[in-house]
Image 1 (cartoon, rainbow, N blue to C red):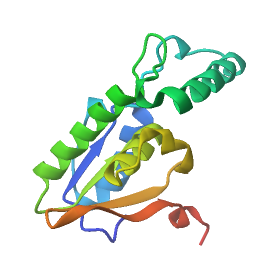
Image 2 (image 1 turned 180 degrees about the horizontal axis):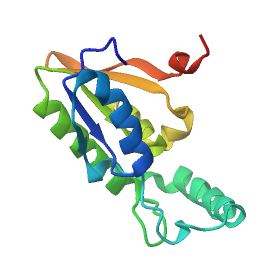
Image 3 (image 1 turned 120 degrees about the vertical axis):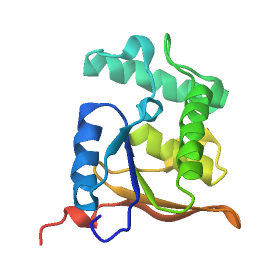
Length: 162
């Protein structure tokens, strides 16, 4: 992202996000702002669960999600509506604080997919239609003259060997 004129850098406080943000921010001489509300969805009792058990529970979550929409929640965690509200409010704060510049955000799969769906006016039941690759670049344009625009989704060309 050296070629982008970044003026601010935000990241989830999780180490892998902060490390990635620091690597991106370095050439721009920016400090990384740790933003707790950019953390991944709180999965409650499924946190730290073995992968095989998580898969069984997550499958049921997906079935419930298709019928209950953003009201379905992870037992002991957030529901998708709460998660969307938390993340979208954070994005709105970042946009407002950077009206005269370009901010970058480093976060996680569900955060990025949720922001894309919300920006485009898509219900959260459509999250399964949005694929976000690890270490990919998604660009949204926020402008007072029009609704948010998706300029780039899950691009990984920067990861290809040169």
